[in-house]
Length: 169
Image (cartoon, rainbow, N blue to C red; front, side):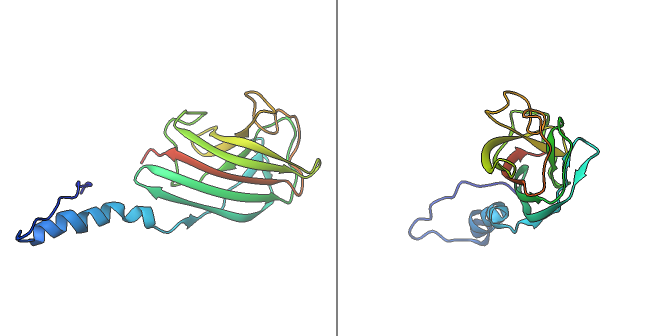
């Protein structure tokens, strides 16, 4: 099924089952994912590919509408990372962005709260692989948070973001 541009019924027209199936049922089925439930997941917070950071997942969920995915996350670090490495958050396994590694078709926005300075930083969120995103902002040019500025995630740091991408399936 695909979306059918709704037709206009006219006075005296016999509204058949095929008319209703095409105009109402099929179009409602096409729109149904827009109103679907979000699916929770448990992301990994890491700094350096092998360093998983303990955290509290306040919220992490996604919804897929066809090949469009929307992911929303809030993580509160309860452990520490390793300075000089990108901070990354994994995506749900059902969300595999087309391309990845900064692909222009993947984007998001977020906020990082740095407990050591008490500062909130606005960030863009970009795919760094087919399984994870990282944070970039005015503070760093083209480098990612944790690499520039060169710092380690600390207990109390917070990572919030919304991310949108075209998926492979």
